[in-house]
Amino acid sequence: MAGKSSIFDMIGPVMIGPSSSHTAGVVRIARAAIRVLGGKPDEASIVFYNSFARTYEGHGSDRAIVGGLMDFKTDDERIKLSLQLAEEEGFQYKFKSIGNSSVHHPNTIKLNLRKGEKSVEVVGESLGGGLINIAEVDGFVANFSAQMHTLIIKADDVSGAIAFISSVIAQEKANIATMSVSRKGKHDLACHVIEMDSGIKTITLEYLRSLSWIKELIYIPDIDL
Image (cartoon, rainbow, N blue to C red; front, side):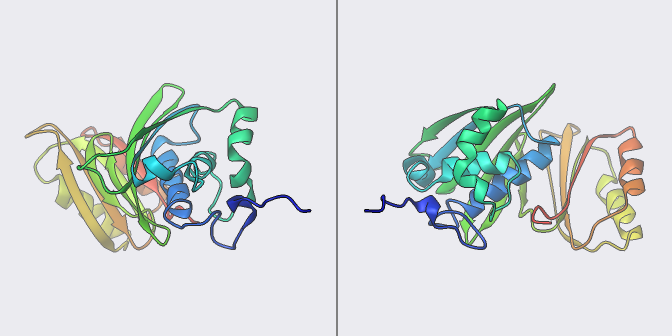
């Protein structure tokens, strides 16, 4: 008699596992986070909140998040083996669950990632249907979907910064879909998150990086490209 099949034996064209919230969305959160980091991490601390905390093992979110951190796409069959593959590659990770957090969306994951000397903290929410919201980056409010071309700019909180950055993007004829700015305090470091319908040239990114008041610039194209 054939053995009992698992949820990971059911592989569809767009996601692995039984639920787009628990698999496709989780993979996309991870793939967005490693682009914030600048590459696949050496180490990861993964915190599942609320609904995820109760179901991440049974619904395959553990395999999905590790697979995403290894940059597997949502339809990659290797996701069902991601824990084994991570061990073989020496990728170090640990899971934690917090089951009752009123300040977090029901399907929230916090990732603390390290690659070499660089580390980032990313908080993502799986909204259903494979859609995600990256709610925070390094403690700043972010709120981007990773479905568009996204700029994350950490800069000194100087007068005219928003208008200047917008004008540079306008020269590229890149339409701004959303823009948000958060800061630690008045005249402290600010984080600009800009979603655009199309990308911008490398030379423009390098120009922005060269400005003394811009401390860090991260460019994330559509993560499904």
